[in-house]
View 1 (spheres, rainbow, N blue to C red):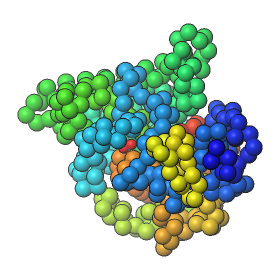
View 2: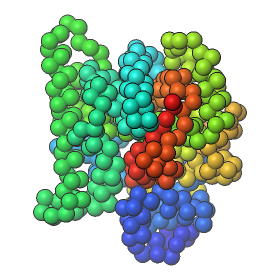
View 3: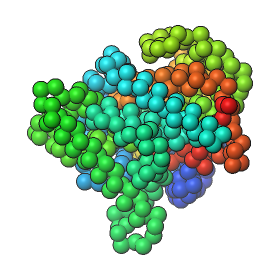
View 4: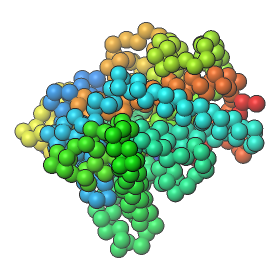
Length: 459
Ligand code: HEM
């Protein structure tokens, strides 16, 4: 077996049990990073999986022109009706068909027309956060960023927000969203058992299935709301990120696939932005010199500043870049299949059927590319080297790069700017024993802070 030449712990040749155990603890990503530290940039992590953490391998695996296909791990993300979305489609042609319908409205130029929605939702989030700080002495920013990001994606995609900011409290929908990461972890680790979940009386399996079914219902309901609004105003339908998809005929895109994509947007577009904003605020508040430099840059701006002006702010963008490096929202394995006939990657022969992968978590912690990788140091982005830019992949890479990347960056800029302009003295709260341990990164496919809270005070 050509894979036997690949460095790694002896047991990786025989079993994936250690990997699955770490996966279930939300620690697989950190475990694979440990293996890289011990064995180098190419590690065999199971009998059939190899993880790479080099720029050359990442470029080959996540190519624009000849991308390797996603593995069956992505079946765990399939919609409850069995249909695929742009996220989990494995067939390259079908994927390109979905992506074509979505990409135009996600470009930087198109997103300018929806900036006002992001601005309005951020303003409401600030108001609500201020009230919570006043009433309770601290605000749970994770909760409010989650309400904010799911409202934004709801309004931009379906023409109507989920009104989470107005309601201001967790409900079934937001609690499902916040449990999704773990739920997908279970689905990925035990794909066969999940299929039998209705016969297995274990809460872990059955709740993974019911949450998954409810996500489908949220997508169906959101589309129904859009259709109702469009019927009420047939000559002036509100343009949304989904307009092209809604207008595609049943032959181009069956309705069940529209639903699958709606669900993908709800999931991919909320938790990711919310956890990025949460870790950003936490990391900035932990370091008074970073905070005062950021607050000074933002404080000098006039009121009503536009995203175009924020793009030009050096320190704000360095802080965002460093947050995406240290706390990438999807930092785990992005596995791909080695094509028929096999291929060579970084000098090793990969036989057909091998699953090759990269994880941003490791790419972002290479000490040669990013000295002192564990240190949150926005200034490292003042004049980044080519390797820093090439190794940076919080949004994946190549033909499967995140479709919501520009939207996410816009949200991060606007929300960070408004937060530190409103609360330049924000600091970590110790209310209810909140401490750094709460923020330990738990990573299944996405990341979340261990105790699912982040308390900040500013008064
Ligand atoms: C900071 C926020 C975000 C991060 C870090 C992030 C990260 C990622 C990553 C790493 C991938 C590649 C996954 C893979 O190769 O398996 C991805 C794909 C994707 N993301 Fe994001 N994402 C973010 C926000 C968003 C938003 C706001 C949306 C809104 C719709 C979105 C929608 C998608 C979709 C649809 C894909 C699949 C693209 C494809 O396969 O063609 N993401 N994202």
